[in-house]
Image 1: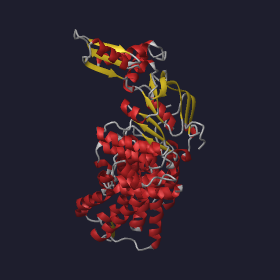
Image 2: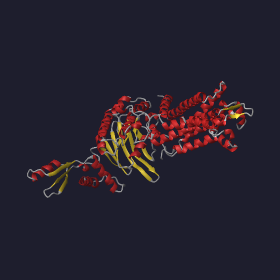
Image 3: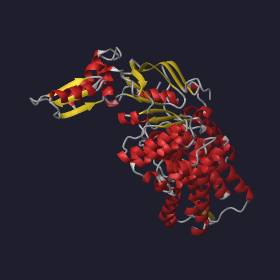
Image 4: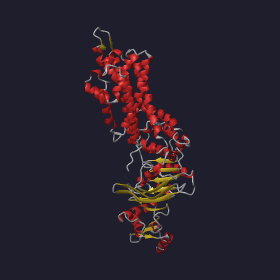
Length: 310
Length: 270
């Protein structure tokens, strides 16, 4: 693969259904080996975007290149380089986990070892069980196992851990970190912002069909939205908050003012990806969707109020 | 793997799935056996079919219905089985998943048609064994008859399979598939001489049935398993084996074109 050119390149992507614009001018790149998280509320255009990249839907406008190929014209050779984990499906599954993986491995020129994938997906105990007999979370692992069996260069994960318990989610993250270490490029959509923060290198936030922000996980939303918040209860019992880039200095000042006493209910809160995300999406909503929420006020004000309400 | 090798691996995968589906086993694989059993039990007391005035000729009820059940098996294994199966795969996401893999649609078709072939052969073989050894029906010994059997069977099964693929495009959801497909298949069986004696049906119904392939499969099978004296009762007074070949050949082309035109991994929405 050409090392310099992005694995995924999207420019001014548009998709409309009649007068409704599902995706309205989205642009982003995903570099080789990168994990890119596409985040946004339901109906924001995430799945439409990802399905256009997978070749399942045709776009209404814009340019898309996936592994150097227009997905609209992607042939079998192109599909052999992709791994696709769709949103949950309800297949009847009258085959065992091993049978299904062995069968799908046969589709690909250079598949992973079936037993290794079964182990990596945590399905060893269920290898001989019919898929129809598995729990929702176990079936989802089979979906992921089928997505990676072909040793894909680019893996699409569309809400991969919906319905997982916390332990299963952590095991899944380990599996994905292993794939990242192998150099797999990953496009992830998820509603779990901690998942995006754990796995993603960069995130794009999509709302109302538009990409309202994009950046590395610890930069998305802008520096303003990342300013920590110091919160404590003062002598009169009122909750006080101060947003500051120097929280330690503020805390030290508090302690000095109290003559060395401990401030009550002291917290230093760094806005998480979830805070930043909610601020961006809410900011976008209040602006009626037309203008991107990149202005200073909206993302600045909202994280405070978000935290205040929490 | 090549398209063909992958297709063959699909045949074994699909056949395994077929035999693991209780619905399919009952309504497709064993249905002709059940019907043959019911007809034999119900009408045996009425005596033989087609006995001449002098008491010669004629065949047992089971022997009379055997060709119809073989034809029904071909139709069920192809049309009913695949139309319901593929509509279900469309509905439950199987096709969407396959469409995202480097599996060629041609391999997929080879898998489906191969599955129909394997299961239809097992079904017909078992039907003949049951007929011969359980119902004591004597089978033809003339190799020429078996040659006719072979080409009618092969042509009929491939045509059925292709028509099944084409018909799978009609149900809007996987769940409605049986409701759409089974009435079509059932009506065809009634007018085409599977359950009712074809030669006793009114002429307009015979003509209507002649438009569809099942009538020709049943006629081809009758020409193999019934004594030649029965040919006189057919529409043209002969087995019209050329007509069988032409009608099935034509429907094969129709099935090929329709399945090629209508088949999609998923319904694109643009």
